[in-house]
Amino acid sequence: MKNLASSDPALPKPHSPEALQEQERQFLEAEQRDPASPYYRGSEPQAQAQAAPARRRFMLGAMAAVGTAGVPGMAAAATPGAKERTVPPDATKVQGVGVAVDDGGYGLRSQFETEVRTRYPTKTTESSWSFTPLQNSIGMVTPSGLHYERHHGGIATIDPSKHMLYVHGMVKQAKKFSMADLKRFPALSRLMFLECSGNGLTEWAKPTLKTVQGTHGLTSTSEWVGVPLSTILNEAGLKPGAKWLLAEGGDAAVMTRSIPIEKAMKDCLLAYGQNGEAIRPEQGYPIRLFVSGYEGNMSIKWLRRLEVSDMPFMTREETSKYTDLMPDGTALQFSFLMEAKSVITYPSGEMLLQKPGFYEISGLAWSGRGSIKRVEVSVDGGKSWRDATLHGPVLPICHTRFTLPWEWDGKEAILQSRCTDDTGYVQPTIKALVDERGLSSVYHLNGIQSWKVAASGEVSNVHHY
Ligand SMILES: Nc1nc2c(c(=O)[nH]1)N[C@H]1C(S)=C(S)[C@@H](COP(=O)(O)O)O[C@H]1N2
Ligand SMILES: [Mo]
Image 1: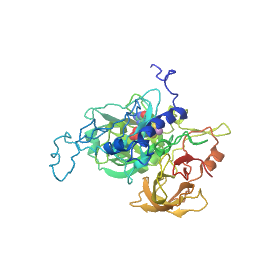
Image 2: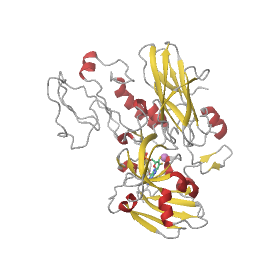
Image 3: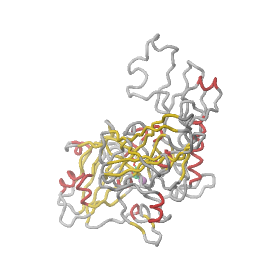
């Protein structure tokens, strides 16, 4: 196969903070001109600001910011995922838009909502990431269209009527299941987060990215619906000595991971539903494995094969990748669990607090071990902490929204959040993680995030202990 990552000087180096920083810069340029954005810098001329409220967008892939100061009352090009409609001077004086006449029968968000996932500027769009815009996230669920993405060989296009899932290896009876077969089994639904273990990978040594979308956007929460993996493994029947399970995707990456059989039998899901409809192509349509609480890489998308064995398969994704190199030259292997983590999403990096006064600090906390028990927030760089309110339902393996009222006195402040899960695990500082693991490993950074609020109101990403 052609090496797609061959060196092209015109393209930014993958994994380079510079490439990500450039992408963020373009994103911020558009945001800072938008009066409705928390990033607004007050630089837009007044007339234009009134004419074009909340009209911000930037193209995915090309990452080009497009200014769109429209003429009032005129229809402009639609914002992503929206239908651009004419705004009447008084909505009570004219009939509204007819029911299901201009959306093709599939509801779209308001034209004034423009959050998009931003693509990590890798050399190919097929092996890439996109980040969830956490800065404006509301509640605990991520809209399917904003779920972060990580593909190693692009988004596979699969006809569900032809798709088969094969189960073989150390089983009493090898089996194959069509999607229709799988849907006949009792299903269950769970709200669960997924997080790439590469979330925050550039942030180990020093702050590199400016926004929370860049530093933490490789995690999302959906309602996942499907058949428990144990049901399907019981159908085939495990042979004595079965210890590991290989899951294989039907995409161009043919992604494979080994899963301990106890975990496979405990709480994994073969998911075909996401937020009330079929899972999106980006999330593995028509079916993905969901290994709850473990690193995102193990939740194999476009799942086509399960092979039971007595030992791990030692695939690329669990040897040369997704292992953690330690200072002594050895590597941690099978660091499956996503440890507890939290982040303040508002206010967060590059936002501007316009004046002193009341702000509601808001953020998300999650743990692969279980549910979030407590989130503490500090506004003085960790000298003192206050308990934030957890917004229920507080569910295991799920994003939990927390808030804390804050009266900003207009002086410099360092905002931090620290979560504890129901196993008693407390989110560590970044320094504690670096002391333990060194700086050679990029995965599994779950340290406390610090946002500095300057006296000017500008919020920035800092490391603070
Ligand atoms: N078949 C297949 N499964 C895959 C991947 C892939 O590239 N191919 N990427 C993995 C990685 S690294 C992550 S973090 C998650 C991302 O899932 P999402 O795109 O639904 O967020 O899928 C995992 N499963
Ligand atoms: Mo990942």
